[in-house]
Length: 168
Image (tube, rainbow, N blue to C red; front, side, top):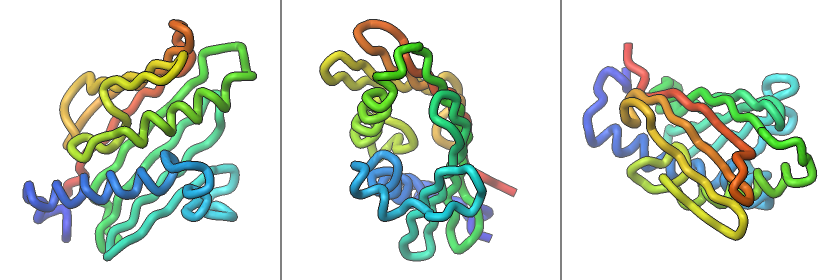
């Protein structure tokens, strides 16, 4: 089994594939990510993205927009090797900016790093928006994290994450 042989080299492969997959799916421009969106989704009501390359598969599925739980799983040769669960929430009553929040989120996520590719950078700013992602506990192998977006100084979006390497 792949995940029983995890070495630092294999973990780097997981992170590299994750980086690549994120830049082609949800975080990509809407024109690009449509190529990897499952239509119809495997699970009713979900929005799902799948990206595959050389035995690797990335699967992201989530529900909703204002309160949006979801999960990401990376498989190698059909065995799960990494996962992240998340729950995001829009905190503003000004629903006219929801699309702007998510467009900004995609931009922030496109600025992630190869060392920590599962969310955006620690900080990112553009126009009236500010983004931050903090690992509150652990590292990519086993973590709890929090992502925030501020619009004109007001917290308008929060995403709580947890995930890591899968081992049996």
